[in-house]
Image (tube, rainbow, N blue to C red):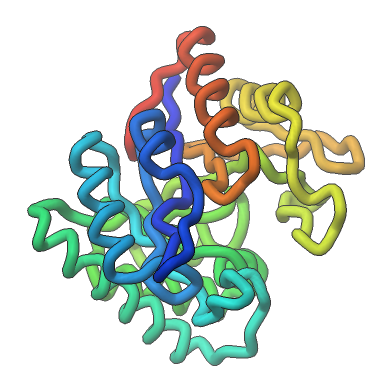
Length: 250
């Protein structure tokens, strides 16, 4: 049994430092790097790719909505064609720095509201997936398990990785609880570990209402901006290793 451990990183920009990327990167197998729209900038992208290269982990693009103030977590009314273009734009930006460092983008994972919109809307999911395929059909598409992100990416011919979350709670339909809700995130390490182990070993998760949901788990996400991100990643890695689960990049 094996699993990928990913984290959303490179989300500082300008004079604003953010997260503990240097401490987290050695513990994960894949990094989703912000591409300058919801967070990140040219300096941070360059530095984060260098760190990922030094630690030999998978490099992923993390395109989001153009919303620095809202950190890309506010829904925007954007046509599928615009979504296609903004994904291409961000992939191109990150790919430029990858080329300079002699590495390649391995996967793409939409960020925040773009991710949630795609999970619920087939036209948006298709636009994101088509942009990724047209940019590089060999990239792995990472999306929320059992949602339209996965089915639309498969439909356009992409390799997919079903993502589950260590630090988020689930609705009964398998969607993530909205961050507007007070119980959307998990802050207790033991609870996060229990959720991760169940998802990886049983392909199931317990919703916020106590319902057992089936899902596929190819990669586990811990949010880099979370208050307990470093602790979660450290303990999850220890727990999975102890259980004999191999942690490998996508």
